[in-house]
Amino acid sequence: MAAPRKPNDRPPLWARLERPAPAPRQTLSPHRIATAAVGVADAEGLDAITMRRLATELGVAPMAAYRYVSGKDELLELMADHVYGELELPGETAGWRETLREIAVRTRELVLKHLWLAQLPPSALLAVTPNRLAVAERSLRAVDGLDLDADTKLAVVNTVGSFTQGVTGAEIAMRRLMAGQGWSSEQQVYLSMAPQLTYLLDTGRYPGFRQYIYEGRHKDRPDWQFETGLEYVLDGIAARLFAQ
Image 1 (cartoon, rainbow, N blue to C red):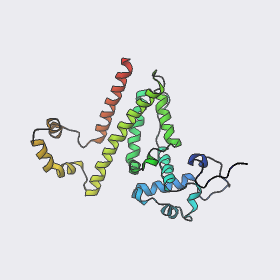
Image 2 (image 1 turned 180 degrees about the vertical axis):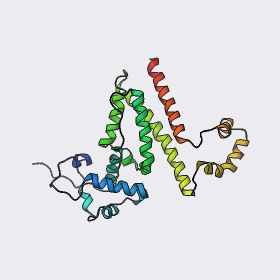
Image 3 (image 1 turned 60 degrees about the horizontal axis):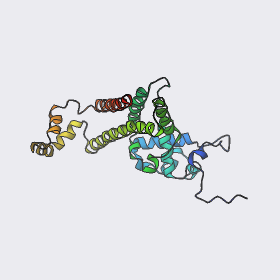
Image 4 (image 1 turned 135 degrees about the vertical axis):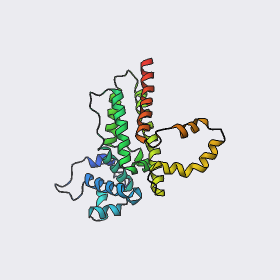
């Protein structure tokens, strides 16, 4: 006789959600729950997401969503998977460089559309979900023919992903700063920093950064900054691959 299941010994979220529905008609569904929660987070941020608020948005009893998710942590995981389903993956005929580049560009666009993705707690940020795995799988297939071992393939994919996350995270931080101050352009950010920045640059200790401040022409073009940096990352990977 099987041992009784402990209260916290539930099957994984995706194993539960992929089971057939217990009845032909359901008031709720994972898709409906995720869509409602994402709408709230897009409009008001993650702090607005609670199980009670979700029930209000869905017009159901407060406990209804618990049939699908155990609480906020699993709800955030469901939300992340839902929006990653929006990411259009490159076709199978695309080469490794084109594939990794397109996934990076589209990931940045996705995160800038859903800013709360950058605020997810570690449990949801690192959660393994079907749509996230689909992105990773497509990336790994792209480098499958490069005569690399499994660890190196993942290192290549993660290098592009880490660049994407880092640059996009800095861009989001800039947006939040601007929104918090009521500013409409990055130029206003730089003006607010002018007294301190001028003092530091005038010390003569930062000639490289001084040159950028006075000669840089793309400070307010995050698309240019991202895509230029991405090309250099891909150039570096290509140089290492074909030097072997």
